[in-house]
Image (cartoon, rainbow, N blue to C red; front, side, top):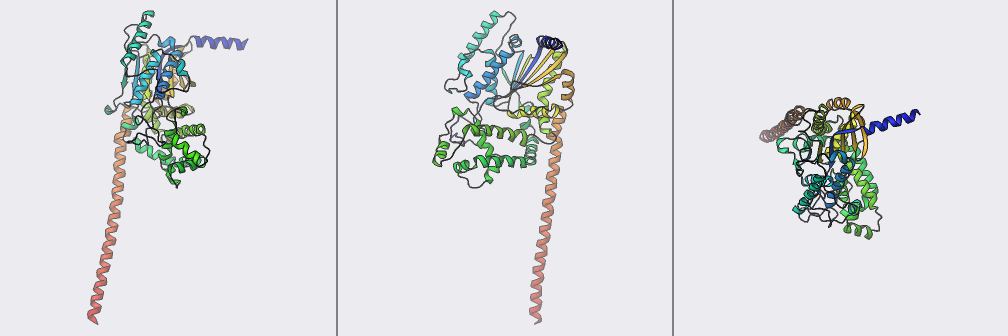
Length: 456
């Protein structure tokens, strides 16, 4: 009887859950290799041709389209009321792959298409469901939405949802921390070499299982090549950029056959995913004090706090979005995931293509809560005030970020450069003294010879 009462109580709470605000943060979809592409032939390390470096592929567009569609199906009762562009804000970095992902996401939410062909893992690149730059496509969207608007009298003043782009040149830190902050790359480098022993262990695993085939394929005799920072990463990144059944690997397969080698493509695909995940999330971004994660996630989380505070206070709610969307990168997901690992001891998320983080802000009869959902899995449920306190105590204000990125570390770098200058100067002075000593000694020897000759 007691268990039944608990079940009824929990069911009642669930039914009374009222979502007030959604923040959806995702990585762009599958792309072409961003590193190791031959600029003349546009081919990757496996000699496969791409349109350009780091561009969203049709597979990637589909991934984000399906993500948008799944969000619509999950939150339909909430989303259906907010077709106005004032109520959903979509932001992106200034790269093609994130901008196109933003529009793909919007399309998945607001444009119903024949999804049967999209649910299968095997896609035909030539038959993409829509063209982002086709005016007919947008007219179809408007037709669908006009039809929807007629059947839903509560929807007024619909506008096509734009993708807004953060301006990194104005130091808008969201989605750009590692580009805007001049010290960020130096801190990444330091973190990488701090974690270099763990990196070497992963390279040893690579060499043990796959070293022979890649040495033959790349015509490399020395293992040292694979320990170089980005070389093995380039191999793995080029391997996972699209689904395996969309790739030929014809040259690579010829080498395997010619040398009578065994190579499990699916196995190496999974290894490559794990390698790329560890490469950035652990080796480059996870420093001892979580400084990089804090710098990288502070503005994203501060924006989220601002909106949920507004919605909780119920002030100016008509003027602020009900849905906030960030189309970002594996790095932006990594920063949030690493910081949450520190604060809430949550397992670090693997930011594969189209990975996503959803923050639900809602109220029920017990109060206000936040659900943090990663790739469809609930990672955290936390009471509003507790969440606010924990986030505020772990993120940096903009002044501190600016100081860390520009002033404080510029001074540090100046001091380091000054130290290096002094060291070099000391070395120079020592060398000059030695040269003077050698010169004096040679002159002394010549004088000795001269006096000795004259005396005899």
